[in-house]
Length: 113
Image (tube, rainbow, N blue to C red):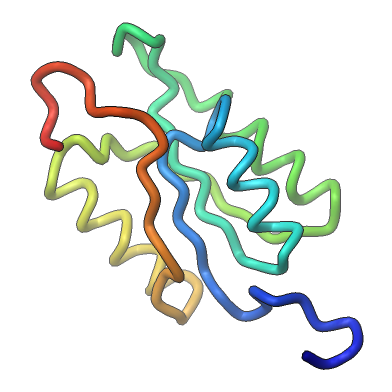
């Protein structure tokens, strides 16, 4: 690896559930490794109620403040059409295919696994 080059430079990483907990930690670590991170979180409670842009936006702000590249996405990946749109839009907006989509929490009752 070249001096100064990070292992994920030029890669796109999509992290679902990235607004809090393990997803947040994973998104930050991937950004530190050089990935352009798509921070996906619907901002619902642990019980699956409500929605808020704040968790995803907060992580994006943290990554950008540290010098990384990130964008927020609020799609419900429990819906297969929304999940496909998330992956399609992350490829289109960044010009590269995602490195690895990740699901960091078990599906909520009634959602698509």
